[in-house]
Length: 203
Image 1 (tube, rainbow, N blue to C red):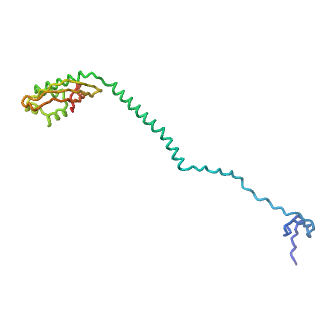
Image 2 (cartoon, one colour):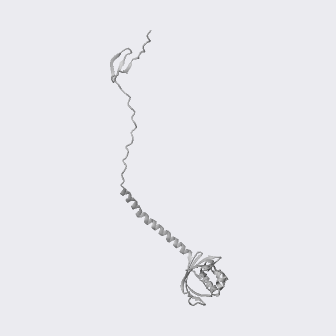
Image 3 (cartoon, rainbow, N blue to C red):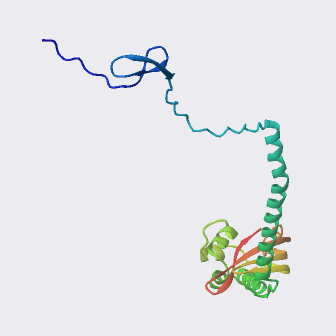
């Protein structure tokens, strides 16, 4: 016994010729219709890319140079102002009252000529004494050398905080050697140490 054939319901079907044809359930009819296919989904429109502006290398160099033209002078002006203000602040903190320095210098020349070791130590630093005698200074260094007669005329002095400068026109020598002449212009530096001014160097 043959199996029952499946029944195709009536409806529009693709007849294989690029069109739809009506099937009435038992046979094809003459009624046709255009075959419509679902439209393919369209991708969302992308904004058009803006063309990039072409910048020539010589234009870039010109821009950089134009900035340097005004940046460098500004830097120099600022640096000059900072330096000037620092100098003014330093100058205003100082004083031309060199009397304490002159008094210390006078005590030094008196101690040197009288060979008073304690007085010399009181107004000079160890490094100054070592440089003065070209060796590690001791009181024996002072007494084994001829006394030095040093006369000085202070010309100019300045104190800046704990540092002082005194320019002295000197003359003199030791009592044994006339060729040992101290006539010169000396610049002495002072420091504030142990509550008083002390000679710390000379040039």
